[in-house]
Length: 143
Length: 143
DNA sequence: GGCTTATCAACAATCGTTGTTGATTAGCAG
DNA sequence: CTGCTAATCAACAACGATTGTTGATAAGCC
Ligand SMILES: [Mn+2]
Ligand SMILES: [Mn+2]
Ligand SMILES: [Zn+2]
Ligand SMILES: [Zn+2]
Image (tube, rainbow over all chains, first blue to last red; front, side, top):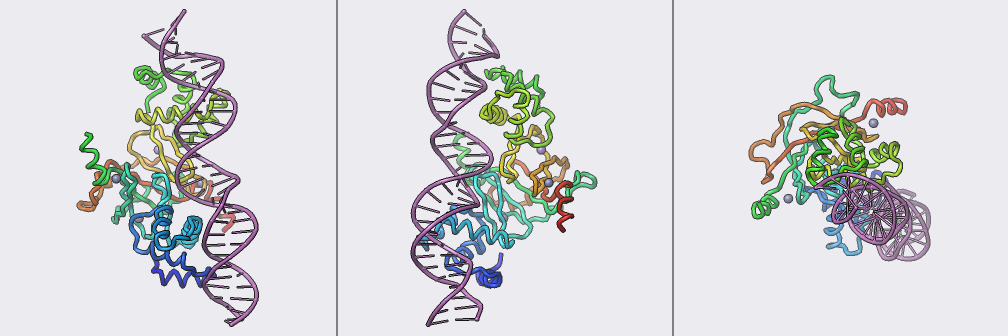
């Protein structure tokens, strides 16, 4: 993801105004690797700016996504996750608590010849599902 | 997935009654590889049994899932897909129309040593995203 | 046959998300 | 600095998918 300064430039270039709300979200997202939900970003933003609205958070995330600066992930954990990392990478997902962690690896996966069934494939993502350390420990007690 | 006859047996064994609604869903799901939504199954079921309710479809799908006879997939296409195929396999997903197709291949993917970040991984799914043939053709006209 | 479960219609409610409106604020080009 | 315009706000409504509820009716199965 671009730095807050770069995003500021980009927004100005595109005719979007650079408001304190947007700048805060630029900061909250930069280097953020926990794949936050809109709600969790709203909570973090509210701590610094109590009057910010959830609607504005959603709106800014949508703007960033359509500019290709973040990606929206649906891991089946109830709500969308927002990922400022737009590079090719994969994910570990906890089936219990919904935690999502990055996994960088080049698995060199591609659809075997003749098996694409007419699809033009753009990318391949691997999702590893299981339990995170925290949830695993909870399990051992109730084994 | 088990055959309708096997599911009938399983349901009886577990004390679930074998109703015409449930039997119809067993049939509609058996060998079904289009990853139907609850709504589409409801539509198909309604054609044969106009009085069946959407509620009953959801309920039976939920029962089958907790018995491990089908799996529920969330591909980020708005609604859940139900997959009677519980073997390890992967998917091609059309970003435009939401079509989901099976892909059988052994990619032999695993989390590289020391990178699991505390996760105990149970399985790995690969999702290939792109455009299906139908949606691809629509694109070419609007270059 | 009778107990128990399933199903039904008909709703209400949930959750995450998007739309709307009208008033207020404020970014930024000139 | 000023004015145009976009952004934000609060306060809702609405959405779509899914689940819950209720009370009545039907039907599976021992
Ligand atoms: Mn990521
Ligand atoms: Mn499948
Ligand atoms: Zn966890
Ligand atoms: Zn398509």
